[in-house]
Length: 366
Ligand SMILES: [Zn+2]
Image (cartoon, rainbow, N blue to C red; front, side, top):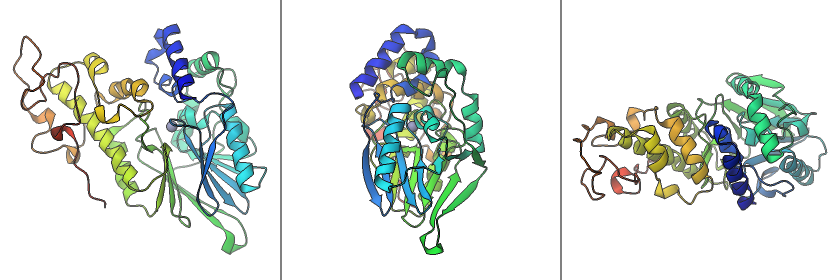
């Protein structure tokens, strides 16, 4: 499946170079092939996660006495149909009364049309973001990849929104009620991104604020908001965490995502301090720790472009001196040798972030 989406992305880049600047195209690499089945994993009593192979997005399935609550759809009609089939199979219900969207991103919303009998719930900000998606972007998806639900077909927007927080109490009698809590987080991975908590099962669905071994799409990233959201997630009460992409895990996934954000922001700061330009960073930046993650090659340039002008909040800047607080290096006719001490200056081909000086220390759990 993965080789197919990579091939599709390469074809698209060759055919439409002018579209390469559209952040949406980062998503194209995430789209699974049509007709694939989803893997379903039980996380607790009446709670499952369904997903294609990485980097495909995760969907949550929660059984309630009123029917299943689905958390995030899939990228297109075929994987969406597979999600619906998996939901029916594990829950025993035919209809889905609720579909919750953790963000407006295409990889989670392009199967909305299959859930027309459901209340589709998102934050008000995420709904507005979905409606803002340009016709050209949808058409690019449809024309190049044949994704049903894109192109001429409209993406179905949420039918119910909230501003900060809402809770579904799904079920009857009272001792069978399933509580599903939705909390809008600071916009980090996407405007108005939300997380879903199941207080009874102690499961957190973090959406794309957290990924596990999958390079995240950062075309809408807000660095400060993202780090603030991760800090809020660490205070929440849960045992299992379902990331937007990658296998479920525990709290350590929050730290892993924070480390990626800090590593990337610091590497960009090093390049800026050295007088390098965005174009250099786009071509030369390497993050060795993450190179093997699905999506790295396709989505790192998107991340570089988005975060180039964003600064790491002070509390995340490492001691003794953050790169941007160090004086700029003296001009040099040739690039500094790789072994130059106090390395931030003039990275010649790559900025390595696996050196001790460039890796964020493990943060203690809060
Ligand atoms: Zn996603």
